[in-house]
Length: 300
Image (cartoon, rainbow, N blue to C red; front, side, top):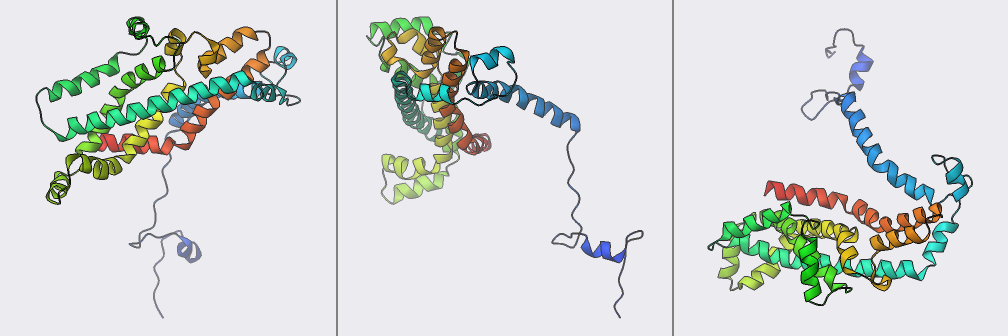
């Protein structure tokens, strides 16, 4: 007969059901954080999510419902506001303009930023530190600060009321964030890998395209997502540069639509919801990529 040991106050049946780890030790119960921490976190989440939900749900209401009870749910739910917006050629024209600006700005920022980051991270030259500090200092100067002299430059270049007048400045102002994130990624690439590639006869450009670009994909995806969302939501620069409604992006379209249909609150909320929906979906789908890319940048 084999002897069994039991913990005082615990029946053998309970003891047999207790979970054990790989080393035979019982798994410790998970410790939950302080209730205050969860309350504060939920409070901040509610503050961020509540306005978005109000706008989206408000598009399913009528003006009479909003006037009678602004905080109530739609009763009944009305989809006509969204259908009218989706049938509008103006909305799709502004959507196309925003898509062109966002894709072109993101592509330019990623390509140029990756090249600059490669040079700063992998090669030693005079004023290397000054160049990196210059890009870091660019984070402290938002677009709003430079909007007046920037508009004068755009006007001299003849790019007023042209999508290029929005794309080129957005690329320039997106480079600081891109360089700051990508440089740690490229520094983390072992020098032995570059030396082995040189021994095999691979040129610097070949090493850049065949080795550096694939290894820096997490950082490239991160800066690409941030650049796309920032470009999609940009309002100040298109406001100064674009004059005709045919060239408007969606942020400007929301402002114009709100002025034209100021008495139709429900339809304005529907237009606003559809305008911000692509950026929300894009961010939600690639959220883990952003966190993973920023984590890799910090570790590098």
